Amino acid sequence: MTRPTLNWRHVANGAGLVVILVLAGIVAHTTPNDEQQQAPIPVRGQLGETLSGRNIVATVDEVRIAESVEASNGWAGPTTGVWVVVDASVAARVDDLGVNLGYARLKVGDTTYSASTRPGTGSIADQFLTTGIPWTGPLMFELPGSLISGDAARSAELQLAVDSDPRADSLIVIPVDLYSLDVESTVSTERPVWGTR
Amino acid sequence: MTSKPPVELGPWRQRARGLYDRLPTKWLITGVSAVLLGASALLGGLDDVPTPPTPQFEPGDRYEATQLTIQPESASLIDGFPEHGVTPAEGNRLLVVIATVENTWSDPVRIATGSTEPDSLVPVGIELAGEYRAPIDLIVFGDGTTVATVQPNVPVQVAYVWEVPAGSVADGDDVRFDVLDREYQGEARIYFGDRFSDFHVAGYVTFTVEDLGAGVSG
Image (cartoon, rainbow over the protein chains, first blue to last red):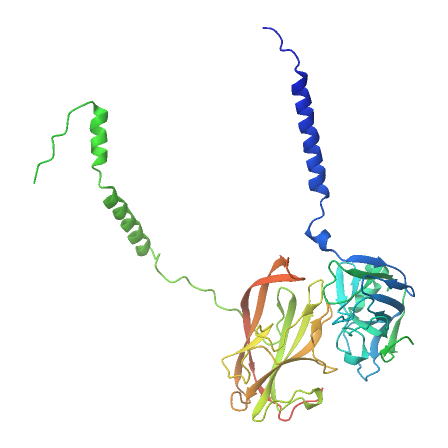
């Protein structure tokens, strides 16, 4: 039997096939999935910094923790946990038709907490926004007391977005170290105002 | 009637084929099915499947639902919560269940009121003033505000409120409340949030209703 001679065309075909498979693999593994395609677009910043997204401009001035809160409208909500009080200033940027602060979350570890609507007019949660003129006032988050002394509290994140669905839109993200904050017994909050204080 | 043509004697294969063609297949299939069905019926195949009884909880028991744990504590009848803006129509009264609710999910959980989809607790076997079995209000004990959302791992004492015609429930009546639950299906694709299915009664608790008259402040 004679040994078959090497057919360079076959070798080239094989190499071509391998190249195509590798390219297909790269495309398949790097295509963003549904979640990535629709994920909010984070706008990161620090406390005190004015952050601008597509249709949101927000400044978070102060974060406090208290066992009880007295809001400007007389509301004093008891809780079995603690209140994290965030003083913020939020405006719409390009359009204010039906636009509200519908997404205000505090993310600690894997758990997220929404701004309480129990204070009613004493808080700016769900507040309808105006273009260019901010609403300034508090947001109250109800958290379990044990959480703020845990490790996850060091790298908590405050997230703000317009409307209740932040997907494919700007999400203001501000890191907050809840662990380093002292727990006050009572915090009084100021009345939400239209404009800056 | 003509007689059947005589079967040609041929090789054995041809004869076997002839026998096979004359098999009464339909009758055989029907017969075998009838025998199988009959045997399964004899062995209890047509009996009703026993449904497991709905578990009964005692007042104060904690039930761990998919997103919330619910601990119903007591039921009472009052005239109204005027200080919280909850006043029934003329001739109606309020049936109130006090329960402690804790969110065991990793996100805030909305609890529904006044919708067609009752949540967590539903009274059974009594006449309600409204069209729906869902509570007309869910009030946080302590500040009297309406609960819209329960935050993770922060237990909250809640009053579930239903409006009932005055004669429908009286002091000392036993009223059954079903505890509802649902199964997690996964993330929704079209809208934003979680998807649930298989809404079911997880158990029930029976309370002896206490008539508190005008109401309690609280």
